[in-house]
Image (cartoon, rainbow, N blue to C red; front, side):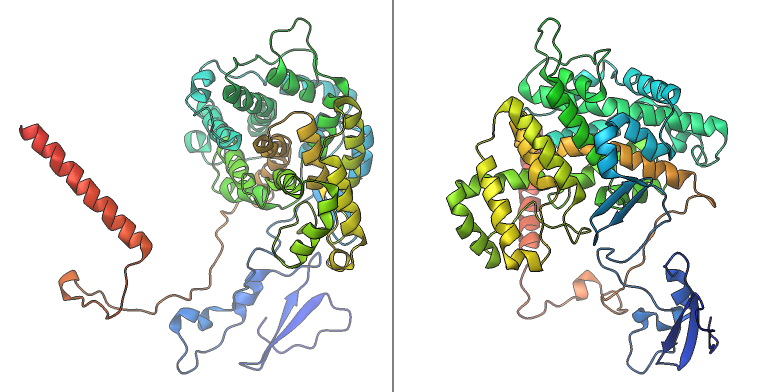
Amino acid sequence: MGKPLDPPPGSNTLTVRDNRTGKSYQIPIVDNSISATDFKAIKASRVAGEREENETEKGLRLADRGFLNTAVLRSEITYIDGDAGVLRYRGYPIEQLAQHSNHLETAYLLIYGSLPTPSQYQTWRDEIMHHSVIHADAEQFFRSFRYDAHPMAILTSALAYLGSYYSEANPSLQGQNLFTKGDKPSLATMDKQIYRLIGKATTLAAMAYRVRQGREFVTPPTGLSYTGSFLYQMDHLGQENYVPNPVLEKALDVLFLLHADHEMNASSTSVLQVGSSLVDPFSAVAAGCASLYGPLHGGANEAVIRMLISIGKPENVPAFLEAVKKREKVLSGFGHRVYKTSDPRSFIVRKTADEVFKITGKDELLETAMALHDAAMKDDYFISRKLAPNVDFWSGLIYRAMGFPNDYFPVLFAVPRVVGWLAHWRQMMLQAGGVKIWRPRQIYVGAAKRDYVGLEDRIAVEGLKKTPSAIEHSGISKRTRLASFKGQTKAKL
């Protein structure tokens, strides 16, 4: 880079000309991408009056708010073509997996890269189900939460808490190369944490559900499927020979499979950002859970139900859509950051919903949902903006029909997504060249250099007003001083 070059036609490079200096730079293109660090070589001298904080002499930086076109790693796990509505796990179309596979088999595929043999699957399933039991001390931890605590707050805390039991899985205690050596002892330790996190995710989620119901916790049963065990732990009330409804068990398994991974979404990125510091996997997964807690990520299907409730009857749909167009209302469950056409998962979920409603009966909101779906799909306003139903539009109705509380919906997203988080974490730990801590740059636009002025020498700027936070802070400080003074007075008396 840095030399004026005329690359031959067809060269797999990008030529950049810096009009500030007249220099041209040739940047290699690999896998249809360019390295951001190559732009550090594009430097210029500061012009008169330019801020030194722009760091012009240190090379160009690439600004990408929200990571709209930034690739942070090379991955072999999930492929998405948003324009064509394609989703594949390790090359397998999501439609085929949903029809023929199950959540645990697909979990093996996502984490290890291939579908398991019968013996591999049996070992995998047995290990996960064996590690579903939680230490007895965890009951006290769960009962420390208020009865009205949000289940995602409980689950996030529980995932981090879980790591406190397993010192052998903590690189801070065992050495930072615990999971990055690539030798057999490291892989065995890594696999055990994967068993633990996937196995215990359903148990922690069920405990978060039952503690809010004021119920005793249920020990994970033997002989049931992954989702069957989950439903058992939530719903068993002492009945003899109780087993969950097989249709609902299968429906939840399909939904778990569909939510297992979705490439570099916000929560997966959070897991890798935290994991890049070589923290233990329990802490990294807890970070992903916290990210998914946000309403722009894991709370979307809950928002759909609240939207449908606010609409009420099907005849209210036209007025609601007009309010959406005027930006007076928010349309939830339509459109996606990645998909510019229909979300391929939405068709599978719609079919699953029909099976569930045969058992539970049709939800009173279904007719409203159908009316909203049909009206939006015929309206040029939404068609031109490529706002098609996504997976959240129908999944919320299924969860509601199965009796889950609205605020529990994100938990039903987080439990299966543990698989995807671990797949990406494992891939990063074992990547060639080791792990580099993720440390993004910023574009500084704050104050230029200024000298400190002592408190007694500062003069208030005329017209300067206290900010609300400063006023509030002053009030707290005053109350604190008064409380301290009263305490001292009582002590003297």
